[in-house]
Image (tube, rainbow, N blue to C red):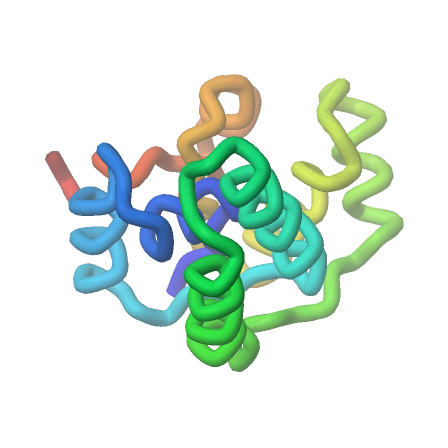
Length: 134
């Protein structure tokens, strides 16, 4: 089990340079958990890709449907007071703090490619490569 950052979900669902590593991460452990916030962040990524010509709207809608089917079973409530504490104490966004708080509460790794979070939470956050052991 892991808590997957939205950036990791994006790398898995939208073909790009880190897709192969995201696929390895998923094969290593397909039990991905996410805060409900992931839907809003992921939708924003999709619309950004559409606006910049990376994908067509129909493809974005297809990716949205596939992603929600795949990740909705792993959606979890977050201890918001804990997220608020983490955001305040570590000078991170409340959005990022929700992923960290969820991973801490579940006692599972938080897989992210966010360098600041990897440095700030070395006991919780790991990169996809670290998680896969490469």
